[in-house]
Amino acid sequence: MIRVRGLSKEFGTHDNGGGVLALSDIDFEVHDNEFITIIGPSGCGKTTLLRIIAGLIPYDDGEVAIDGRAVAGPGPERAVVFQNFALMPWADVLANVTFGLEVRGTPPDECRDKARRLIKLVGLEGFEKRLPKELSGGMQQRVGLARALAVNPQILLMDEPFGALDEQTRRLLQEQLLRLWEGQRKTVVFVTHSMDEAVMLGDRVMLMTPRPGKVKEMIDVPLQRPRSPQVEKSGAFVEIKEYLWENLRAMQVGES
Amino acid sequence: MKQETVAKAAVKSRAAPTVARLPALRRFTRENAPELLALVAGAALWEVLGRSLGLQWLPPFSKVMEALAQFVGSGVILANLGSSLQGLIVGFSLALILGLLLGSLMGRYRYVEKALDVYVHALFVCPSIVFAPIFFAIFGLSDASRIAIIVVYSMFVIVINTATAIRTVDPSLVEMARAFGCREAQIFTRILLPASLPLVFAGIRLGMGRAVKGMINGEMLIAFVGLGALAQRYGAQFDAAKVFAIAMVVLIIGLVSNAFVQMIDNRLTRWAD
Picture (cartoon, helix red, strand yellow):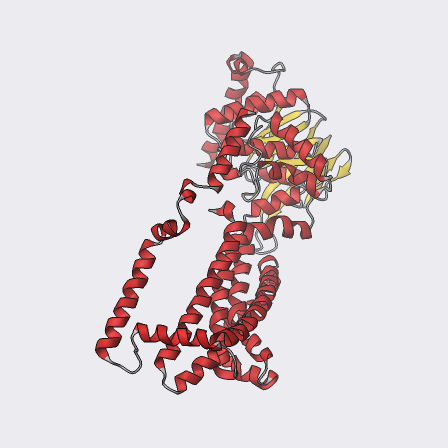
């Protein structure tokens, strides 16, 4: 379980006196095997929040704990999927997927076996020897997903993973992610700026407001699992999406 | 399975393009036609100017080739070439090791860069030959002097390029490595080093060229052996054909050493093009 209590984060306090409050008094929990999506306008600190949970940046106040242990850096129970894929351009698909396993000291044979299994799982069998630049964006992010899953994390942290992809690719990857998640339910924190994506994937949607980033509301998504693309036509889906848009629109209008 | 064979075929075809079936010489001529034409035209122009102008400092191309053939035949070139290359290899290797080490530290650690940047740039801009008398004073008329000159000639461009290369590595890759639990040493070997290789090699190529310059300049000033010393001697005798012949040999060393670095570069950074 991920527990966040009274979390605050300020940027730029050291260099230029007047710091920017990126996150203020954030409270929420993510239960085991829960899929939570975080949405908010740009500047609401959703990516910052994810990076704090990942242990990549420190926080100023409050508490961030995983199964009761305070987060003080990256840990083996967490894996991150990045918006820009963050693949090593010099390494082929197989080497990219084995990366996390190798740095954790897994024997080479085991690395390769596990990586091959994951590459197959994300549908990239036959592309093991390709370089990232030889793959489409969607395929590259599937490599990123396989790399994260390869270390068998308990928690998957996804930072706008499909944000850089075109809509068709994005929808296909959403469906694939849902299928993977149904097969092996991990705890997922998924940051997005797409309302469809937030509702489609999440058990709950966390709506954030900007400047400073705060939690506005936690919204339950009472849609049945497993979810098919048809779910988008259901009343509940449309209603939640509308509700999110009303809120996000009000925030944007207030900004401009 | 089918996809796999397709992928394999693609890899194979990239490694062995169809052009490879042509005889090597014909392929070489075809691919380098502009360069070869330029060289032939240059030699012809040189020959014509040399003959028609009759200047003492511009012997015709054929005379230079004659002098070169004599040098090679008498073994003079070989003896001096060996001495020069020895200095070049030792000096450049030292420059490479020091340059990569210093450059890496400067690229990764902001305070190291801040501390050393002014020295590195000062020494990079400063004509390296001014250090020759100092090295001569320290090491005397020994190999150490020549080698030290080669090091100062070639090291700083490697330092600067390596530092820039390391500093400009995509920060999201470093973050990714940290997210997977890499320690500093692992970030260095697994991310920073491979990612910076293309730019590092650009520096190594420049450093190689400067090392050849340093070799000749050093020998001209403070050595009795080597191609530089030879050029110095014939220069003093106003024997232009011989000086040009030595220049030809230096030119070839420059081209070959550059091609050698390029070959290693191509092997290691194929992913970048």
